[in-house]
Amino acid sequence: MISKFVQIGNKIEIESIKKTTDELGEITRKTYRSELYDIESEDVIKIAMPMEQSKIVLLPVDAEYSLCFYTANGLYQCLARVIERYKSNNLFVLSMELETDLQKYQRREYYRLNTVLEMKSKAIDTDSKKTFEQVQFIDTDLTFDNGTMVDISGGGARFISKVQYPKGSLIRFVFSLFVNGSVTEYKLVGKVLKSDPMENREDSFENRIQFVNMVNDDRESIIKYIFEEERRQRHRERGTL
Image 1: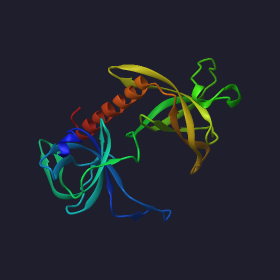
Image 2 (image 1 turned 90 degrees about the horizontal axis):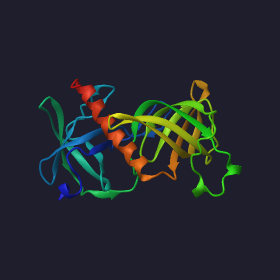
Image 3 (image 1 turned 30 degrees about the vertical axis):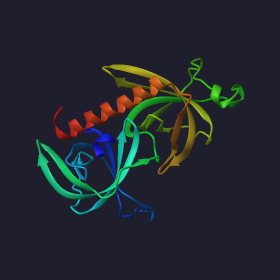
Image 4 (image 1 turned 135 degrees about the vertical axis):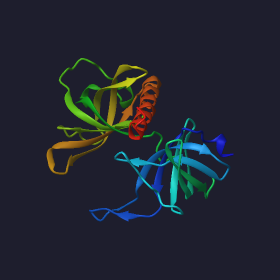
């Protein structure tokens, strides 16, 4: 039964099956975010219509999409088709028919949230560490570089800075989130997965990091923040805040 794997309120990533070509000629697939609104039957679910830049995205009837459900037990994926669009209790809803069974999905473990947050980073002197697993955040150096976080998940983050970090290097990463009614500061270690110059901004770099040696309390707190912020954003978009 589908209700054994997903629950109402679970986040959903909706990816188009049809390929498109971007301005650079690269093949891409459009992706939207939503959440599960109701389970009508074993084959039909209802989800909130996705929004993009505060506007409702009217996915066409009969169009097919790949759905990725973010649940407490991991990711589940299936293919589904839009069979109806309507408005219910001031919410625009998509009714979708599942065309395949749910399958465990290993593509990405954590849900990413687009955001704009101040943060600080500092390269770790690789000569001072014993082993990769022993690297921890040591709060003795106050000469951090300022940056702006543009997305975050329970597994890592992407940020813009004036500094380019070597791929595979380690950095100290400092930021604050509003969780459970109060501000929490996080001091984490990140491994640089990517650090590239930004287009039309030669003095800025886009960096993607993976958190390492992270305690579960910090990870769970970040995930909680992401879900709370997603909920607040959807309420703002609907004008219910």
